[in-house]
Amino acid sequence: MSDKPTAPLARPTRATTPDLQYVAPGVWGLRNVFVNLYFVRQQPSSGPWVLVDAGLPGSAAKIRHTAETLFGAHLPPAAIILTHGHFDHAGALETLASAWDVPVYAHPLELPYLTGRSAYPPPDPTVGGGAMAALSFAYPKHPYNVGSRAHALPADGSVPELPGWRWLPTPGHTPGHVSFFRDEDRVLLAGDAFCTVQQESALAVWAQEQEVHGPPRYFTCDWQQARRSVALLADLKPAVAATGHGIPMRGGTLQRELQDLALHFDELAVPAHGRYVPQPAVADETGVVSVPPAVFDPTNPWLLGAAAAALGLAAAVILTQRRSRKSGKARRRLQRNQRMEESAFPPHADSIDPFEPDTRYDHNSVPL
Ligand SMILES: [Zn+2]
Ligand SMILES: [Zn+2]
Image 1: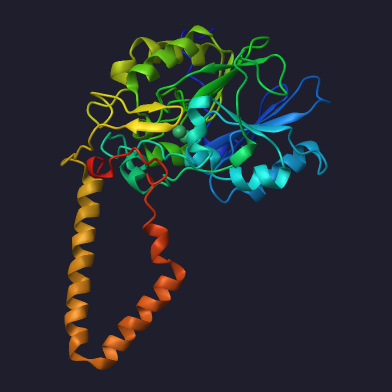
Image 2 (image 1 turned 90 degrees about the horizontal axis):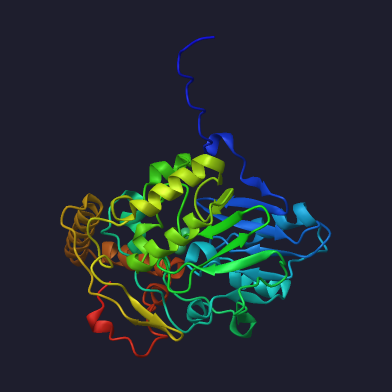
């Protein structure tokens, strides 16, 4: 026998894993561009099923098609259950809930963001880690509204339609974030309480490099809570963890890396600086109550690039307008272009104030 150490097995990547993956008995994961959602069926496998999270905006058709492939065209889910309501986990929620005519369950502290009452605390693009973080200022922030379909998860910790599962409060990434755990085979659906990819990096996300990481930094609004939530999940010693971002992980590798994350959370997960690092956003059952002031990171090349691009665009517009004053023909062309762009991108769509539903918000003190 050779004494040579054996090379570690290559970790799964996007190239080696299909979009639809078997996770555990009765659990399948669907990768939707850069986020995952899960189809979970009551065991034994003849029972009803539920959808855990609802993907990106525009993904309803893909989710319905996958559900029909798994369960047949005539078996809609008994419910949609959310880990939390960020745009990449609830993007298709309104369409799916109404098409299937099903209830939506989430933690009571998450309901304001699902009933049109409050926007989430704004993302923090200064946390570093890559393009996914730097560009987070552009992510949709408005609340979804499923009206009377929205219900609080049962207070006893049970999960509707899924006996054998329990939900655990894992706040920090959002105020009412929850995870789901099946004790019998220690299967964990962790949402964004932690990830199995470095979600801040577009390159890591593109390749789906598998590795335990903290919650996506740009959206995490309470780091103390996030630390406690990771410790709680690490103590469960899950056999499988299927998270909101990344390829599911299993066994000793998962437990080691999750334990390491819990033990060294400040170094591994918490950004060196950022809007929510010194103090958290405050929220209650009615939505966001207050957020710390925005911070500007002058070293962030993405922000500098965006600022330079905006300045360049402004200069180009001014020059164009000056030139067009000299020429009626050019002015008419400018007006025609403006009309065409406004019909494609109505100006009011960009001017919606994401915080409007929460009347207690002091908008002036919360620069985005
Ligand atoms: Zn999230
Ligand atoms: Zn997410």
